[in-house]
Length: 365
Image 1: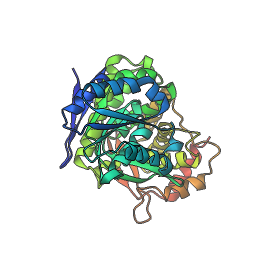
Image 2 (image 1 turned 45 degrees about the vertical axis):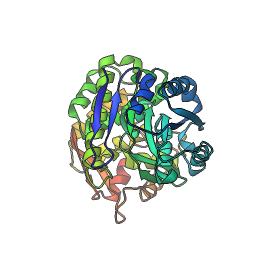
Image 3 (image 1 turned 90 degrees about the horizontal axis):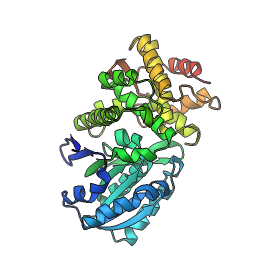
């Protein structure tokens, strides 16, 4: 039986459906939403090779007419130039306002497809079919879409909620080990800021660095708890006017590390892990939470095989400068998400630059 998590919004509410083998029911799930006949399926070559035909068969069996658009894989291709390829495909396929874009892939594909859907014909339907753990627990949910600017991550974007998020845990079997570890960073994030029970569940297993080490029931718990946390926060604050900002825990310094390394040296989850180490230590230094909890977070991140230090090639002052271009800067002040206990966090702009500098130096390789 599928596990269904509603995302309740004033407008455009939708469901997250979690079930092994769900990909084969994609067409039937979409059919019940009364969408138009035309579907533009957006993916990358690796994912399409594994799952493209299954997705197309599921859609065509349900009566949809499908065209595919295959984009290069990788964060460095998450650009306006790549976005143009989706627009070209939509034009060639004569996409209409009732039509649907389906994002079959990880967070990069989901973000770009969502933004293309938000902006093509001033908004068409989008369905998210995440194939990475990172996208399943985070990127596919909540309607944040966008592409990167050369000087900052996700600076070009829009809020555009999906009509459906369909999660098939079986597709994780083809997920590279590094991508799995990267996603665990976001899962740990939910444990720190929202769900203390999830945090202690993660502490209870001997290994977190590979999918095969996780019991099947724990994987299901990770998916359900993480999606419930994201859905709950988004339902209360759709467009990040307040509460939703806590989901950026670890992302402030993480995004700076990502962009300064050209999206090549560290991936998103690895950067978030480094950012959580920094934010956790900042919280301890500024007496937001005890040092013992910062140490437990660090141990969990290490158990997941994630990096905990800033690459030696980066200059601390460049990171501090990059923080000023972060989307969360308000009135020139960088806003940090800092944990106050397991399962709770706060947002503050009262973090002295010198405290940031000291922590960055402390955790640099």
